[in-house]
Image (tube, rainbow, N blue to C red; front, side, top):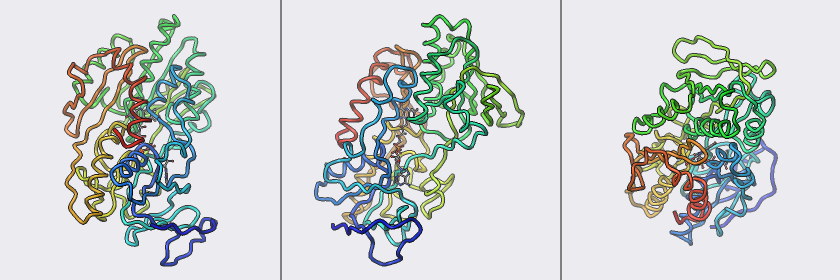
Length: 414
Ligand SMILES: Cc1cc2nc3c(=O)[nH]c(=O)nc-3n(C[C@H](O)[C@H](O)[C@H](O)COP(=O)(O)OP(=O)(O)OC[C@H]3O[C@@H](n4cnc5c(N)ncnc54)[C@H](O)[C@@H]3O)c2cc1C
């Protein structure tokens, strides 16, 4: 299909014509893990298909490695590649952000005012990180011992502050909102514990996990192991406690009990924040939105509940499973099969079962590979008991999974 080139127009001056500025058979919103995996699989299955990805960023991140970057295992530069280099050959990259969805007109509108029309749409703009939702956090982040693995910019400060930590209280938080890879909030804590032991500083340190959740992990099979890990490491837990304020100068964290509203002030020397997150504003303000602001799709077919030619996957979708790249790998197969069915005029037959995975790093040489479905039933890959900590699974995360991502998922092969 053809693409109509036109000069950029400033935001807010969109022409309301019937002729879109661009037209493609399949338009994918977001060139992150989900968007590019779908694009690559579509191209592999149907090289004749005209596919475009709308993505504003010129850098693509492999975020699962941010945990190891924050712990000093890999340089953060290893987690980023130019968007151009990872966009599949033959796929058009429109370097813009979507500003509005107009599903009745089969088009989206970008922040430069252009319209992009489609036969089928895949929505995958990820999750929005709301740093501002914790008072004082934007000001404190990256200084005075406050760090976060939840962005490429701030992940460098995690290792910088951990390396410079000489004892005191190290506080790790998990918010009351959905987040991408919730397990990552505790992974960096276990790595910090291991680092402090190796540095001979553990007996001078207190480690506290303040989590808005009610338990250490949602699936009991893995929670059992993690409770033992917490005990072995001497980590204190404050469940149902949500971080609401960071007093950077005073080095104090204000925690609020999610049920009683009671506030506790905890002094810290190092603070790792998992920030509140939510549906992107552009999604929650659109006709595609459903409960919680997420793109409302059927949990099995991943097809939109209101528009049959619209699909969603990944962190921005309403799918009630842990938001991970591992889940995206399984979702992408279903989206591609069902989208091709819809384009061919048949009903979607492929079904997603909620598969997700969380490689919970428990130290520099150990990992519990949690894999489960919508019902919390284990969906383990290996023939051994994955609820046990293993060095082999750590090596999987460190070496095999990044390779699987760059060379498998992003090329439509895995
Ligand atoms: C610290 C950390 C550790 C993690 N660990 C793991 C792990 O061990 N295992 C695992 O499987 N997963 C892990 N994840 C989660 C994983 O990275 C995400 O679940 C995955 O990237 C989701 O893919 P996505 O495409 O939905 O979102 P993303 O990969 O975030 O991509 C979204 C894309 O949409 C673009 N976008 C945003 N707004 C717009 C717009 N308006 N228009 C167009 N494009 C837009 C963005 O620029 C971005 O490129 C981790 C994440 C973090 C932060």
